[in-house]
Amino acid sequence: MKINRRMAQKIITVSPDANVLDALNVLHQNSIRHLPVMDGKKFVGFLSESDIRQVLLLPGGKDMKIEEVMNREPITIGPEDNLEDAAKLIHHYKIGGLPVLDAGKLVGVITVGDILAAFIEIMGVLQASSRIDVVLGEKPEAFEDLSRLIKAEGGEIISVGMGSLPEEKSNICFFRLKKCDVGRIVDVIESNGYEVGDVIA
Image 1 (cartoon, rainbow, N blue to C red):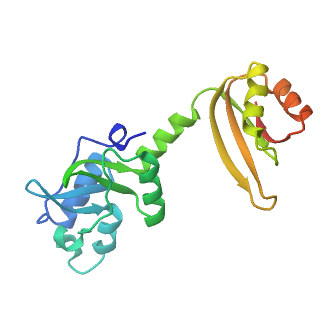
Image 2 (cartoon, helix red, strand yellow; image 1 turned 90 degrees about the horizontal axis):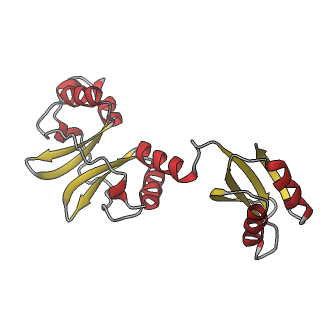
Image 3 (spheres, rainbow, N blue to C red; image 1 turned 90 degrees about the vertical axis):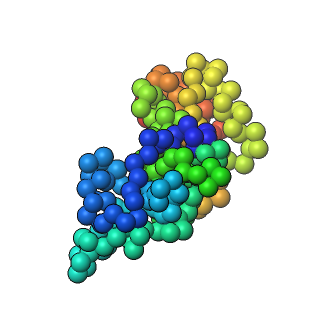
């Protein structure tokens, strides 16, 4: 999924010569945690609520200018990049959001909340659903085999996740299905030699 499908395009910004207290008020009034800093039409920095809170208790902190506090070289991403790339950057750099630039022009902001909402939608977590976790074992065709078994028993797969079991050097597959009678499906999976882990009916 591309960044431009999930980023906030209605961008609230702040000027570099505004003060810290003004920026904090803008964040609270708009229920956001990140502010791109614009000098006219030029993107010059990025500011987070945590950046502000770090200086608020300093002497004269409330009157400090945004240009003294902002990140002048923030990590950025493009609108045609993938959501997974944004997630990796946010995780790696331990940040809460990224300005989205297209040829140097600010076109949006993507945050942890935007990414989480997209992944929840992709995984079908909010739908009425069932889940079966299955250890794949050593069979190279295990995933295809399991998918076939589930479908043959009337299971409709919404999404699939993969994880690892380091202690067993094996992978585990998380099948999310449309709400169904998983008992029969589990019996068939186990009768075909697979180990079933957690089951959510």
